[in-house]
Amino acid sequence: MMFPELEADQTFLPSSYGGDIQALMAYWHRIHPTEGLPGRQHFDPIDVPELLPHIWLADVFRDPWRFRLRLIGTAIVAAAGRDSTGLWCDEAFVNFESSSACRHLITCAGDGVPVFCTAPALPKPGRRNLAHRLAQRVHLPLATDGRTTDVVLSLTRYLPA
Picture 1: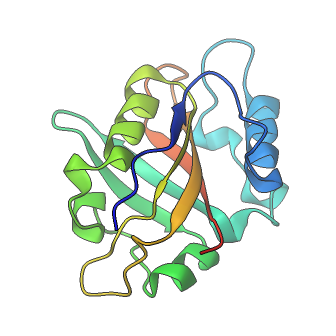
Picture 2: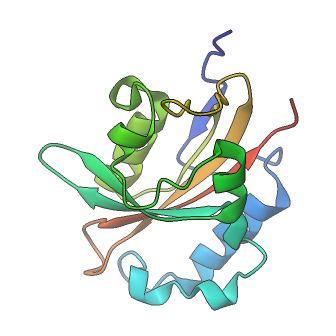
């Protein structure tokens, strides 16, 4: 069964989002410099140990848009049934280029804005299929130079089936 995209918003954090997503958003605001975007150099995993199992980082490549999975939390690996660290998103997920997840990452990276969404979990090729489950996600831009997003910091929370 396919689910329509339920929510996607770049402007505010809906109150229906879990405490872990709210905590990561608050942390991102704390590390946000006065001018420009925070960069990977501002993000210290030691500051958010309780969130690490649900966090993933994707390196951003442009022209064409591609995302390489730099780090994937243990809760995400357990839910997916494999560790996709080091893979391109289009290698790790079935039909990634046409997915709402791809559009959300491009919006986050291209516009330098947070993106929140509730959408089906992405299916993994040859692995346990999570497409029947919904996931809440936040994607947060990180820019080494403060302007051009080069890493997307994300948190995924799978909703109960």
